[in-house]
Length: 225
Image 1 (cartoon, rainbow, N blue to C red):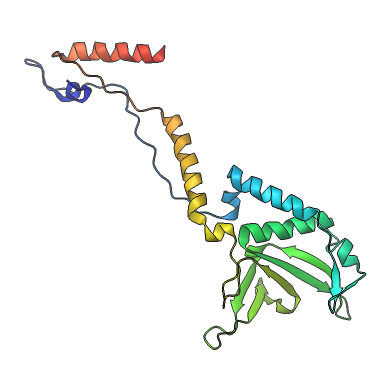
Image 2 (image 1 turned 90 degrees about the horizontal axis):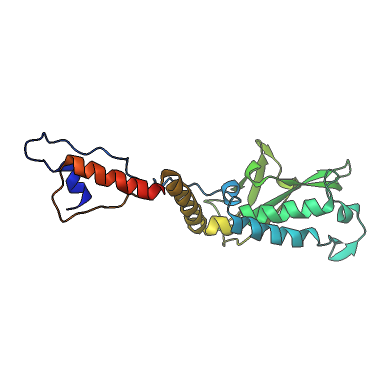
């Protein structure tokens, strides 16, 4: 007889009382996962891929061009006076890889010349198509905190679709793959925290309540050893 039968089978002359044993381990719940850059970086494969590519970008030089000719400019040595050039390049690459878009905000002198470039967090920039609904040719406008910064933004896009004003990175294009990895990791962690499922004990002989309890306890002792 199966162990589940021991829990419900009525023994002649005894009240019908289920056998109370250790709480069985059920499969852990499958939580919903929202894939975003922060969560995705907790996946080792994503983190390692980003690290490899950004390390390469840190080593790349910057050339400043005017009319397709290279010119001498301090922007090439240090685009942002607040951070080293290597970190500036790393932030640019990471924005493209994690968000599909990278934004540089220019600071100008009184003559309108660009004096400094700052990498802006992509989630801080609101990009809209000013020609949406009126023209098939998109015209991007940029706002940060409600301020129009279109004139001072340089926007690099990854994998842009025709007629769209923003790009798409790997995480935006393949979120389900990353989600599956995170779900599997969370599921396995929860599984081992809850414990492995209990086994099914059976016997070809009739067992009363006392015998069933003894068999269960012996099994637990074996498992604890």
